Image 1 (spheres, rainbow, N blue to C red):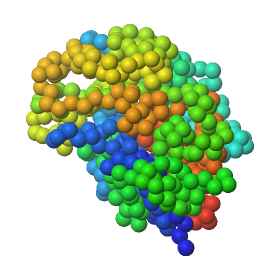
Image 2: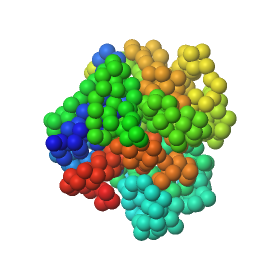
Image 3: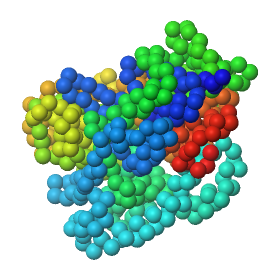
Image 4: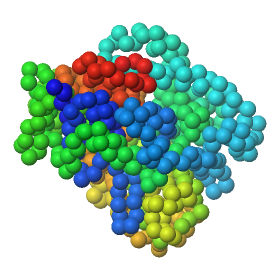
Length: 503
């Protein structure tokens, strides 16, 4: 008889696990509270305009390719990928901008243009970060269910490459000798929701991944990845229930035996995969007293990422803008300090604009654009009344975009608009503290010290998503789904083939 697995949440991690497990012969049932799949990776539609809710950068495409193959499908046949070249534009001020590229020689020429004499430092950066990536990536693929996992050969070989005691800014400034140039390789800390002056130096490997392997766009948006995964899982035999929120995990004698839906129905299963936001899951999906480690007090005391203020605009004009563009605040260091240290709203904002129109004509009618604008802001630990600030900050953001970009007439061309504040992330998307990138990635919340894929509190429960190992960001979330699926297979003696060598 097939073993039954219930999956709470059809986000990227839950869908990865569902796709793999259904292909390997498990009876899989997925419950998703929303009317469509994707979670923070779902599609937003405003009339004829469509947007990704969250992730817009696809890195380490090979991980996605692998999980599709392991799920019995070919991602290249299901989705249309475009490798972006240059990858994005970084704008320091009215005079200075740089277009980072995964073309090594082009990137050196960009550095030489803006930072004369610094271009050869890119070779040193590549040489060491290639070694760091080769040593560390295997550590991210390995589950950490025991403290003994720290003594594995892979981890012991990686320790010298962790840059312990150094921040991301320390490491990158060490390569390039210029803080302004280093910013071009440190802004990636936003994927982790951390300040580059506080983010562990080991995460310099993220910018290396971009420069070595490139960044991809998916036609229609990265949300289409989740749609494709759901289709593959259903084709494999999985049952997908949308608009069906889960009330709680049923726990008997320390073991999960299924889930109870909001409508009162109980669905029993052998294993439960939790793809809900970690903080939300710990404080809402288990009866009081079940969890001894992750009590509400403990969850509240953990460190969380920043949040984001989102503005989605449908406009009746096409602008000469790159696909991705990041604009630094006038005083970037203070802006970052406001977000992560001062816990206050910074009117001198950094912002990111995605303009798919230059690459992909499917998100808006002809002659129109679907603009995605993101501002990193402090999470809900700050005392900010977003009901009061929402309209003011929206208008300030539009003013700032008009001032700093070529979109000088943006306001008069807006035909559709949606805003998501940190409070909306909490109330509408079940994101604890509105911390969009989940738990912070400080050393005390990584690897063994991050919530385990095989949940340490309740047997038969597995965690996927940004709040568990390996962490936030699409490739690592896919990996969390693969790790959990592989562990369930191993537990039940189900043979499988996987490019992840550690389970």
